[in-house]
Amino acid sequence: MTVVTVFIVFYNFDVYDALVDKFKYLFQKHELNYENQNIIEDSRTLSIERIGAFGESRLDGWMNRLILGDNLHALRLLLHDPAISGRVRLIYIDPPYSTNQEFRIGTERTATVSSSHEDRVAYRDTLLGASYLEFLHDSLILLREILADDGSIYVHVDVKIGHYVKVLMDKIFGEENFINQIVRIKCNPKNFSRHGYGNIHDIILFYSKSKKYVWNDSREAFSEEEIRRLFPKVDKLGRRYTTTPLHAPGETKSGVTGLPWRGIKPPKGRHWRYPPEELERLDKEGIIEWSISGNPRKIIYADEIVQKGKKRQDVWDFKDPPYPIYPTEKNLEMLKVIIQASSNPDDIVLDCFAGSGTSLVAAETLGRKWIGIDNSEIAIETIQKRLLAIKKVSAFETCKIKHTDRSTFCS
Image (cartoon, rainbow, N blue to C red; front, side):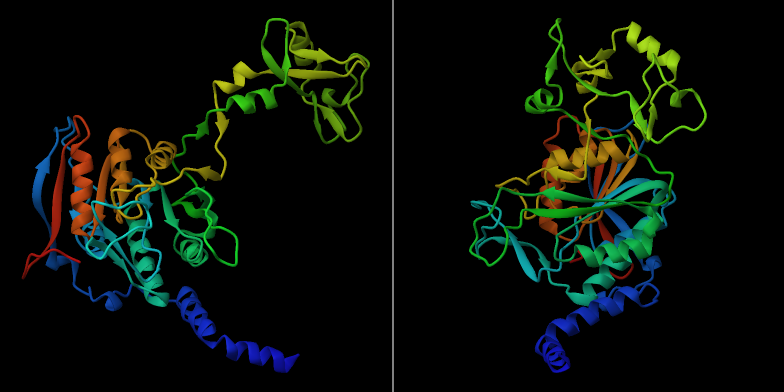
């Protein structure tokens, strides 16, 4: 057994080295280190230069920002802006996934995975291992400081890197501030030739900055099939309904809910869910259905529940566009759900890996303020075009990072 174990370790030496490389970075104590990205410049040497302004002015004077430049440079500048630092209510990011791929964009794409050597390079996802984790770590540290105390952050990643990113998130935002790992169905079932199950999902890690965070209970509509299944009975007026027990788990040693009602004792190990006077009221109003054997159950009408919608769970079916205008373009309705749940109108929404700008479009249409950052000129062009297609888009400026000794596009 010992010989076999040693053999396996050496046989998978490359995999072992890769894991050690990642985990050593995840668990070591370190300060912010930008040396690997060659951006060790002091923020005092940086500024944001306006390229253009668009849209209709807001009454409050706020102007949304679309920034072309290096992620960490831009975040460091925003951190020193008192109008933004500590005031961002919601952050959504869809960072690179450490795939070691080049993503291209063209006018004749036939599907998400299609590309041509004639297409323009949208961005390169080439940071791997510890270098990737260090880059993401530094971004998350800055994002945490920019986030409001009652703010939230959603990090969208794939299943190959997601578990490493969650360790980073636990470390930076605290395990106690983990809210959900959302499983997102991203595409239709695949029929690729591979020894394994088809991969149709990615994940979204949802964290808050503190225990007091903005939350607008997210609900979704019932389908007709669900209504028929969950409310199978129909009363004489044609109203669909179901019934639920009038008792709850746990025995009550003292108190009226543990006593018989109308001569009926609650089942062993349970107690009446309501006191006797409430049970009488429910029965008088016709909200209790009595079985042939004399068992009372509470009536729940479908029309009273359906109008509220059902609570959204942590598995989402929001497939991405099959013919995207930009690589990795995300589902617009999904971003609307996130923004509505974790922010209010006029709150600031930030996306520092803006890509196609879906989060910014969603924020704009829902009446939020927004800030978008990306280091791809093609991304900025794509986002600006999408925003200007919105009728009466609110004022926004397109900017780029400026250095004291030079002004250049960052890439």
